Image (cartoon, rainbow, N blue to C red; front, side, top):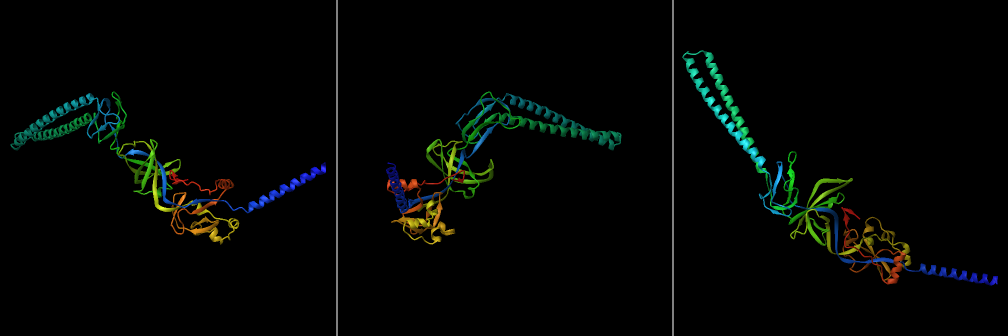
Length: 418
């Protein structure tokens, strides 16, 4: 009984070993599974992405130069105003009182000037009489000297009175200006996008002018202030086309043009970026100040060109691949390449054979490279990689080569490639 059992086990072991050897041998004869992609024709766009904020082209903070209590408001949020239009009024009674006091002071100083002029005329008459009497030797010389001193003193008093009058008039003008500032007027034509005060509120302008309103001149023309990373700012120039999206309209793409790259660096957590100003038309007023814009700046573009996945330019078949395909491996320089040769060819797989085709690469968007037509044709299959076992299994089940889906563009977040 034991001998029969041992004999059965030996037979099973021999059969298992033979089957394993058979499958290993047949597996070695299988062709290598390749991941391929089709050559397509279309556009290749190099772009830099950044995040910015929408702002009005011209924004004016309307404040007050004098302190007081808000008596009336003639504008509110979203109000359309014209230049010179009254939009707020401070309580004017205090300023009116100061103007009246200044006018009274001017009148008093004017009277003092008139009195000083009378005194000057009197001293001049007395001086002339003293000079005539001195010439006739009818009065002593000391009387003449006294008359001369009185005349000079009267003239000096007149100049002092006139100076005080000028100062009083200046004070009057200052109080009149303050009274005028109690009426706040719009400095530009525009729309009110912010209001910071209410009727009855007291505003103090002792140190700086408090902001009452913020006016935007024209929201039909706006701008995006985008912060572009220092690694990409060298490729940004005025006039480049821009596309951007905002969360308020996720299904709509807006366009603009680069207007200016500001030289002032912005440093945040040791990351340096530069503000790029983008002109944006807003005829339908869909865009509003303060919205966050996800900006794509187009720095290079090629239309109606053959497109090759970047992976195809990096694929290098080994000698084992050629042996498995029954081909003779080419020279090492052609198969692996070095220097310029490594980036100047792709491998086309057709009729069970790998063939290297030289190409002239152009711009790339991070996943796709534009190439000169050369020997390539639209629809040709280029090898991008050796398929993994799971990919090969999926290929066998589907009965067709595995062609990876390629996104339309590659983006850079805040100017950094990914």
